[in-house]
Length: 379
Image (cartoon, rainbow, N blue to C red; front, side, top):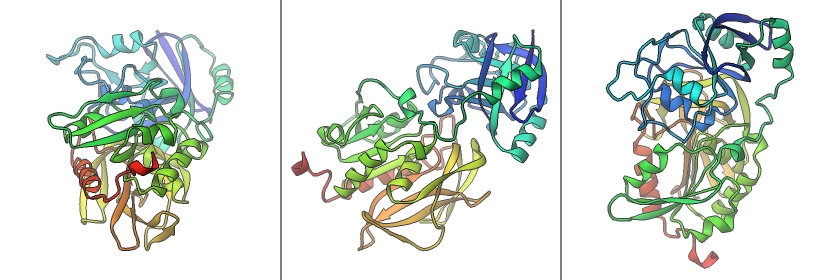
């Protein structure tokens, strides 16, 4: 069955239907990962995005029941060049095509994904439509231009858990963390649990009182979709936690909200960082890490020097070596002691790389060294 892909600037590609039949709209973005497509598809941060895979051959390992990062596929649409006809992994339970159909995800295959990626790099991420039911590009273009934009969208509440739940520590419990689910991936609390942390995962709508009721040693904000400028309740919660000197660790969306809580702005990147091969320098150690990314927004903070905030002194701790985008923040007290930190990328990194796993150890050290872990007096 023929399928049509139309970008909001009118660029059109014709290919074969892949996955579910029908029509879908979203923001067109590209991922440079050569593996880990199952983790990408089930990452809630991709909500309302149509993902273009730059690796030409996708689906050769099929789909298994062990690697999903959430309970469903979140992408709005999927674009591949050369889908595998038969999965070949011993772990596979079904084909990627069947899995996309099962979740109602409309896709397209057989198009020049390199040309599409180069177009998005030149023109920037934009709205797109994929249809296996519409044959008129102009008619589909009109619906693309009428669809919702990513800028200004508050989406964390759409992907978050509705009920709080607990991921128990593996082995002896050492610490307790309140984790705000803004689109959390399953591997994140698992990485903390491995380090003896009992993780209380809370809905995105949780209040500061809900956080304090857990009596946590630290607060964590997860990755998630949407425009950080449209997310205000969670920023206020974080500011309340910082005022109480509760150690904080945030990743991805949690880095952007940390930046806004400290008084910095955020902005939309031209085409974002998505993939598992992004070089980042940890300026606190001088080491370069190969990291996993999925973000279309970034923090607007000065790369050099420090900034005095109501909660302490803020500095940029990590920088992307491709384009100098802020990839991490640190907050210190006036004596130079670390109070909170965040990174823009994914240290849980399923399906890899694992260069940044040390950040979970840094969080453990921070909480262990804190002299005032959420003060029980405030509760």
